[in-house]
Length: 209
Picture 1 (cartoon, rainbow, N blue to C red):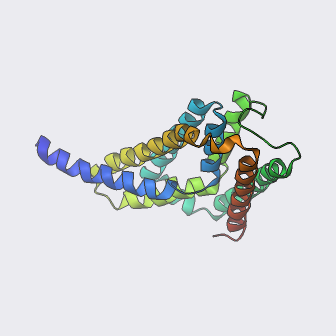
Picture 2 (cartoon, rainbow, N blue to C red; picture 1 turned 45 degrees about the vertical axis):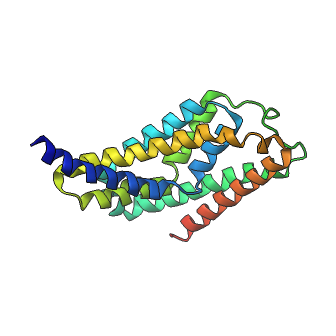
Picture 3 (cartoon, rainbow, N blue to C red; picture 1 turned 30 degrees about the horizontal axis):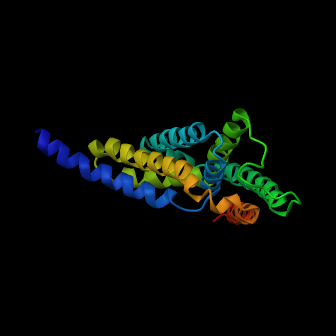
């Protein structure tokens, strides 16, 4: 009985892990923020924990069927799309200002962000970004609905595990790039790239993609 149950759980866990990894391992607003915090070595653990736990919550909502309700509400989707677009445009402007600023940044040259600001920004990138909801609640929720009823929980655990592995690897692995970002020009390029990512995602949201 145990062997049969394990044989049924393992494929669902792996499917959830692989599906979640395919969705989150991409250059997005949330990932760009985590990368930047990792490079600065600023509040890395709280930031990655917030991202991982938030994804766990959103994935749980998707697996439980909440994604279908979100997808069925045009008003909610429209509000999330426009609110998220405005937030991303604003943060993109901040990143562009850093990239074009006269005082170039270095790893030790930027004033440390306080924990409260870092966590509020992280929460905004998570809950005000419709792409996070689309990936975790809607898409993963839709895939989990195709699983057998007893396999949805291990699917969700696998998906949440992939998210946690990714954010910890991104936040703490960023320090391996520290020698490169010791040069101010590298920070200009990074912030310029972050601004472009934010504006691209905002444009996609406005267009309804």
